Image (cartoon, rainbow, N blue to C red; front, top):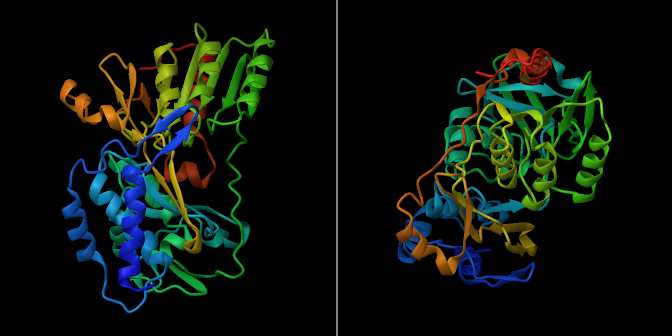
Length: 394
C-alpha cells in the first residue's frame, strides 16, 4: 500500500472506534467514551502525517506500528486496552524479565539453557536501548511497572519486533547477550513452554490450605465446579488465590470466588500483570478481607476498558480492540461504568474522575533474578508459611 492507502486505513479504523455502534448483551455501545480527550482530530491528523516515514510502500507491520503509536498519542496514560494486535502470533522461545532496568533471559527451552541468566544487549545490530525506546512509543501505560511487563512480552513477539523502524527482519533474528550470540530461524521456531505456568482453576492442597490458580476470568462452568469441590472439602479452612498473570476476561465470573471466600481466611497473590477484570476481582477479594501480597497491578484501577469495539483488517491480519467504557472507582472503591453518552457529564461531576488510582498490596514481595533462575516462588512460599503460622501480614 502507498502512503494514501495507509492513512485511509488508519482513518477508517479510528472512525469506527470513535463512532462505531456495537450491540453486546442487550446493550448498545456508541464508540470510545472519549477518544479525543487529550488531542483534537486536527492534532491527530497532523501528528499522523508527521510520524509516517517517507517510503514508496508500506506493509502491515508499518500499519501496526503507526496505529499503536497514534493510540498512545491520543490516550496515554488512560487507556491500555485500545490497541492493534497481530492475529498471527509468533514468539521467540524465551522468557524475558526486566530487572533493575535491564532485560534478562530468565527461562528458555532446554537447547538454549546456555543463555539462561544472560542480559540482552542487542537485537540484530541495534542496541537494546534503542529497541526499548521504539517499543515505548507504542505502549500506553499508567505506570513504569506496566511498561516493564509489556516490554518483557513485546521483546519476544516476532511480529512486533518486525514492526520496529530500526529493525530489518526477514527469516531470522539475532540476539546478542553479555555472553552469547543467538540466531533464531523464524521458519523453524521452537515453541516455548513455561513450566512454571499452571492451568486455570488448578487446585493444590497443602495441609489445610487450598491453593487456587485463577489465571484468566473465563470458563464460568469451571469456576462453579471448583467452588463446588472446595465447598465439600471440610478439612480445608485457609485459601491462597494465585491471581498473578490474570489479564482479565469476564468480570461477572469473579463473584463466585468472592462470595465463597467471604468470611474465610485467605491470601491473594498479585503481580503487575493483573489487568482489566482481574483487578476487579482483586478489589473484590480485598473488600472481603483477603490479604494481598506480591506486587501491585501495573495499571490504574480508574481507566478505559471493556473492549467491545472490535474490528479486523483482514488483508493485514490485524485485529483492533477499542474501549467502550470508562471504569471509575470512588473513594469507597465503588465501581461505576461510564459510557460515551455520559462521559462529559461525569468528567464535570467527579473532580478526581481522571486521577490515576493505584491499588497497593499489603505486603510487597518481588521475585528476584535468582528466584527465576532457580524456579523458586518466594511469593507463594511466604503465603503458605504465613497461613501455616497464622501470622499477620505487615
